[in-house]
Length: 119
Image (cartoon, rainbow, N blue to C red):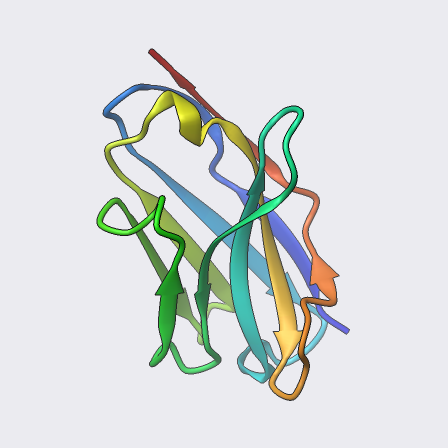
């Protein structure tokens, strides 16, 4: 199975940018479709963006469209989330997740990285 480790979170002012990374190990990275999720304090975890195994299919939550860009580098076993024009409401713990190509749900999760956007 795959192991996932997020990095790149931190404290940023509103309007700023951050790039999150998700490093995968333990199995062939290109065998997985990947996604980013986030959970703010007191709220349920929500979908942010997803990318298929080749990077040829991408989808975003409405809250991420036009500001966030998901990408992956299968040669480096890493997925990214470039976040621009950050808002205080983007403050959350961000998680990366993986699902097998035939899977219907995300079975593998990282430990999360905190993103805090100050106003």
